[in-house]
Image (cartoon, rainbow, N blue to C red; front, side, top):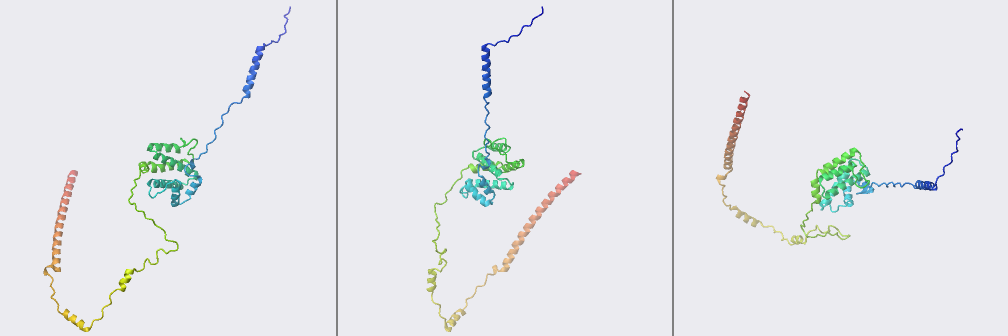
Length: 309
């Protein structure tokens, strides 16, 4: 008998397996339906370093001014009032004036100048806080090289390597080299001495009046009265009175002769004698000193000659 092939029957799945399959499909569809959470990109922070101290318009205006005008505007913008009596405010205004002049020499743009002012302001505040010199040097180098941010997202990426070296050299010759002087002048309290309590009030002359007054240089009343009340001139004398006076003058008193001991010849003789004595003494002293020096040099030459032989 030959082998008979039986038809394969389709296997029937249990209802439990079907339910598991449907659950997996549902969970997979839900997983596909859910979109993954994407972190939002952080909003870019605007780099406002150039405008921390002065605004764009103020820096543009300062760069285009002469040094005298620039100093006046710096005193009002910083602010630094009473620079003629306040030493700290005067130093502060002068330092910012020199910094702006340096920026003009290097032909920095407005953002570069503003960033330089911000960096200098930051270093200057560190001096006022009592920081040490090494802290200032390290902070400046980190900020200029971009390895540190002054504020989150704010870097000093405004300069080329050559400009960074020029700025570093400027800080080295200024704040770093004279650090103790800066710290002493800015942290030391200034003594104030009141030398006078007198108050002088200067008022303007009234409108329409003359300044100086018309009669300020006039002749005084006293001079006028003295001139008017002067005695009358003497009347001319007669010839008899004149002859009588001449007769009285005719009797001349004997004139005393000068003392012969103090004549000009005697004075000249005394001066010549004294001068000769002084010159002789001076000549002898100089001759003795020259002889001593000559002997010393001869002894040295003899020693040298013996040493050579």
